[in-house]
Length: 460
Image (tube, rainbow, N blue to C red; front, top):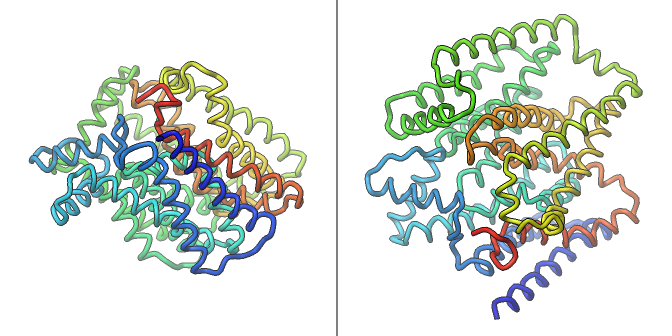
């Protein structure tokens, strides 16, 4: 009976997705504003309900980040202060628990369902407002749910689920402040909330906006005063994180433990870390001075297309190498999940492969057309650099703490989807038709990939 329910639900989901892709990609029949928002809510909930109710009985009970946060909330409710990277998330769960009286695991699951239902419409709004038409925004949302790297944090009730939107919104508001002098107050509000809701998302947001400012600064198009509020957020975050407050002191201790367990012995010594930090700041100052004086960005902008084309194979090689290294770092996990079957692995990674292939094609097109000022292009470039740095650090970290580049990819997908969408809009009608019929199947495969369905995969 359960298998029949799965089959019927998958058929329903495929039918719904085909209705969307045919209407958007082939017929180009625009939805009315309210109709599209409702459609996105239904789409988001349909994806979540497959995992929540068809595969699991409301709660994702298998070992997962969601299960970990339920445990953390239970410990806090008993008066303990465990290390929590998403303190705001936990306290919101406890607030709803105290108001409703429902069990913590039910509250956590329902909170995840609520966020999932609202996430796609809000992302669509930001896509549309950030220089995109309604058509591009719609394309972007459909492309986004092809990759399991987005669906995984999107489905599970955990801080990063909402953190994806916070990082995207914060970068959007700050970029408008840099370019048009707008939305500074909204950026500050998002930044403060992100720190208390999820520390990792806060670090990603601050790193991203700092780099966005830096790229404009070395071009002479931004000023130190525009970095004032990000610097205040960084300073305040450091003060609170290293304060004697129990919640953050325990989190601080968790970070120290992670470095102590690393294979780099010198990271266990405080003075060495301070020296490395000072060297990093010095190197940044030197590079900034060099880039401004030599006008490096301007020279890149003026390069002939033939020179830019030479960069493409190097770029593709770096991406492939980075993904291979990350795969081998987590090889035991992948082998367990996919039952040592390369075919099973490839079938359920096909959505990620297509998303990555389209991104490389679209990104290289931006390079060839020298469209280096596009905020999405700059954001994905920065996140790829952060991801590469995270991968290098992950090589030396202990098991279960060596997947930081994967976490960066989760955020990266939201910025990469519009780049792909703009490229897809220029495809011929025949190719768009092919994509319209292929996309629903790829979305369903990616959804199954993150469902933790033990009848298919080999891990709980």
